[in-house]
Image (cartoon, rainbow, N blue to C red; front, side, top):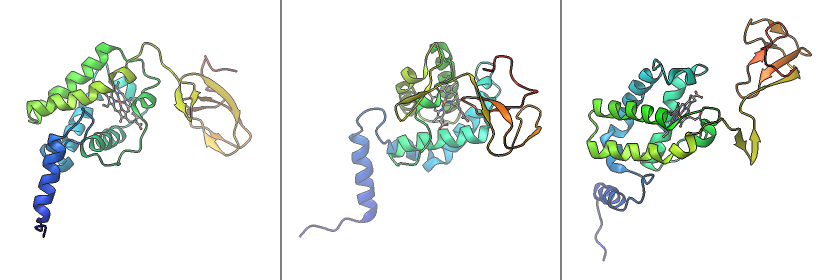
Length: 208
Ligand code: HEM
């Protein structure tokens, strides 16, 4: 008769086997997750990382329409999903998320160095720092580019930059002067950010 195995031993065996059987840098990484204190340290690392990114002369401008809270939550769930193998990240894939950003190899290296220094500052072991950076490296070829490209949604490419003119079907506010805009008002909007411009604030290069 098979001997009953205690749940704690089962858990440990599962942990050990997934550790020894790790295939590829995106495979679940229980050792990493344990070192990240089941996410608590991951949270601290990401908070510290974005606090630096949001004042970094080369990186901050990419986040001008975003908030640290949003960036932190997205990256936390993205990394948690990779390290644990859980399906907990429902955001954009890296290619689409960064489609409008012109990011050189040098800029990618700069962000990577910032991340590496932050991981070291929070005392993650060197082999784990290497494993984390190996994950980031997987996305380099999807993120680095010399010109922006449109986001692909259901196989259709949505433009990254430019303006369209439309007529409001519901009331809104101008994102520049905050004037109230009634249904039926003709507005200009940015195709990626959705920023709305009233007729007084129309950007110079808008398609009129
Ligand atoms: C120089 C390199 C990078 C820059 C400048 C950059 C910048 C940004 C910016 C501005 C956003 C949008 C934030 C927002 O919408 O609120 C973003 C989103 C994101 N980035 Fe990066 N990023 C870089 C590299 C990376 C790398 C290497 C990873 C992962 C390994 C990553 C993962 C993400 C994720 C998961 C999101 C959220 C996507 C979503 O909105 O659903 N980024 N990034």
